[in-house]
Image: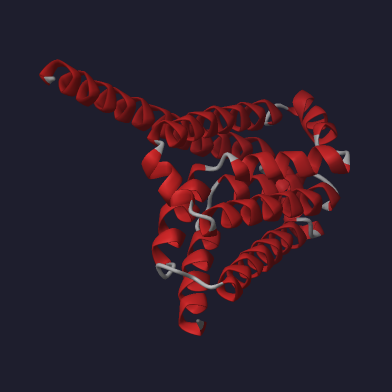
Length: 221
């Protein structure tokens, strides 16, 4: 069991360390706000990771294989939400929109919801938990292993994103961010929108292939 946990943890750490929508959200909130919103959003991200992990250990990969339309619907919704986040980031790059952006995530509930939705619709999370983590599991895992993996993911996600919130809310980091806020937010918006568009186009192509295959099978019969 230890070797399985170690493998899953190393894979998950690699995913956490690779920049994505979650990282951009937490760092942007922490650097532009007082850090409280970023910490609450980090908890929202961790809750999203935990839910993804619970679904994975309960057979998410099998569900995606049996119902590919469900997976594509999730990918489309994730792409749309990423484009929405990109739009918010681009708008916040303007000086007159900055305060509005901060106020939008000022309440704990709003910050938690922002972190949770960003992760629960994150295509990188769907890829990791729906395929990579599921493939690392034994064929018939016991309850102890399942609970251990869920706890491992929850603690790792919370620790990493809370650390990001702490580091990027330090005064020196915030001072540097204030100087380069506009180009940083626009760059982040371009990165997030590129990921969202790529996911959207890829999913549409996959859907078209499946429709063509289904039509050919129907015609052949």
